[in-house]
Structures are given as structure tokens and as C-alpha cells.
Length: 187
Image (cartoon, rainbow, N blue to C red; front, side, top):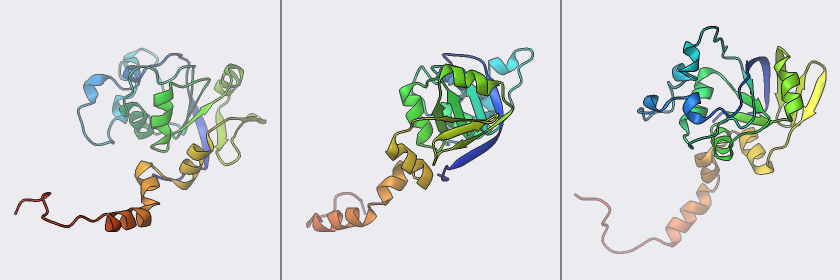
């Protein structure tokens, strides 16, 4: 996972609330085992509507309760694969929020009022280290758990966090090595 520190650029706006994970990427596209290639199915049914236009800008600004519904990892994968690096909304579903941070997609909760103001902007800058969103001469702070922030800044997914303790894991394995026949492999 790449480190996340500063995301800046044009914004895309999705003026919808209570967007669930099946609307983000419908279930019929969840048959692949790799994490890539889901972006082409992002908002699949809505993309067929007349006048639909959602550019793959770095920042998506949307309504409250984004990512509700089933807890599929595919929804953040599709958003990231489409080109988004950060999501800004008044609120996110808990599991969706966690799934985003585990792949380096930054979810930023702001108040309804600030989200509405951001929707009227054309570009923004999200500074994770300072925990602020800058747009149209404004600077708005946001909250994030310190450990989540550290992992994002350091570019650490769950495997990366585990590998930070590789020495301790190796010591444990060595200290608890079993003697006797090996039963994990057949000759």
C-alpha cells in the first residue's frame, strides 16, 4: 500500500445519501478474486442514467451514510480502481470506513454544512498529517484515529503491520519449535 499524506486536485460530486455497497459495485461483478478491475463497474446502474457524469478525480464528495449495506471489500476496491484517493462525506458506514483505510483510500468525515460547501468547490487539498481539508480559502479539520492515521501515513496494510514484528515472530517460532515428525507435508 502506498503512503497517504497529501491528496489534492479536482473533486467529483455525488449528491446522494445512503449509498450502499451494492450501488457502489453490484453483486454480479464480485466473481473475480483479484482486487483490480472493479472500477469499470463503479455505480454501474446509475452510470446508465441520462446525464450521469462522474469523473475519476482524486477526491469524491458525497452524502451521509456512504458505504452502508453489506460489508464487501469490493466497494472500496472499485472506488480506488476508478481513481479516487479520498472520500469526503458527513458519515460513513463503520465497516466500509475500515475497509477503505486498509487499502489506503482515505475517508474524511466532515459536517453536513462543510460537505455542502465543498460540493460547490472545484478542487481541494486533504492533508492527513495536519488533519485538514483546504478548499476555497477555507481550512476544515477532521478527526481520525491516531493508529489509523499512522498506518496510512506509513503505507501499512494489515500484512505490513504484521511484518513490522517479523523478528519477534521468528523468535517465537524458534522458541516454540516442535520436535518430532513433520505432518504438514506429504512426500
